[in-house]
Length: 100
Image (cartoon, rainbow, N blue to C red; front, side, top):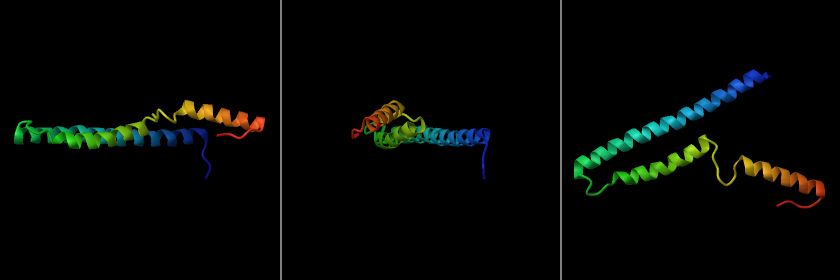
């Protein structure tokens, strides 16, 4: 089965929208559930011990990495790094030196 350029673009755009929907769904769930936990925490002990922050912190770490993946943000191996490394490897191959 062969696709033309417009069909390929449509498929990629649809996949991207699905990825964004999953992230925003996760974010919405985070806000609603952590808010509910904070309310329960307040009503049960009036902030004497804010246990809901443990859930917020744990889930927040997962949400942060989900955002990094969704928005293609990687401070260590981003697009700039990839391009520089590709050029470096190609230059080293042309010069006959080993790359690292």
